[in-house]
Length: 306
Image (cartoon, rainbow, N blue to C red; front, side):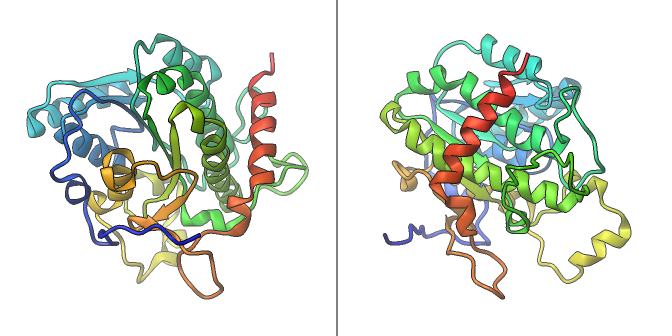
């Protein structure tokens, strides 16, 4: 199967990939829409005419960002709703209060390389937030996505997925030593596997699902890293937030990718398979259909816990 490509590149911005596209009448949700590339994702979608809801932990910050985006885009249909992705009740409440069709869901929020934290269920916090929270949210919104008829789901992953497959025998680091980067990498692999399985399961509903590596962007995502840890990125070519949001926006709204599903994109194009010595690329294990199906079942079992 040939690789899917577009005219856009590493340097393209969110505004450039959505230029000339009319999203009027389409409704979108962007998790983590009040910081980092989430802000620029919301701005680009709202600028193209979509109704956009910022799903955020801090609604006061969300309201300030929404007001700024309304002013900069002239689109009054920018809203804010609270969600805490590591809290099953909060995720469930968000999904249950959503009314009507949902055309675009950008699972953008996340935490990275944080010290060991556990949810009340005992789940490792990065996996609980980055994967399980978005998994539960998307399942909860499945009816709304299906009602749209041609919905798009964007699952934000990372090049860090290259650090770790999903360790099904010890997902939550109950027996193996905790490593913040391995935990992050595992959660980002899970984000890709989710896209692979959801694309398969929901094809008949007209829902397309893809995973995205946005690129390296200096945002609050790095807040848990020490100055010493940040030195590993010396010489790294950082993207702007406008560039970092571009691949998400492309998959969320561009007609160029209509019908494309179950793939991993970076720099606005489908990624090449990972090869030793290259910076980008997608690991084979992240696209493995058997692992994707297994993760789906395991995730459902976790969320079904009383």
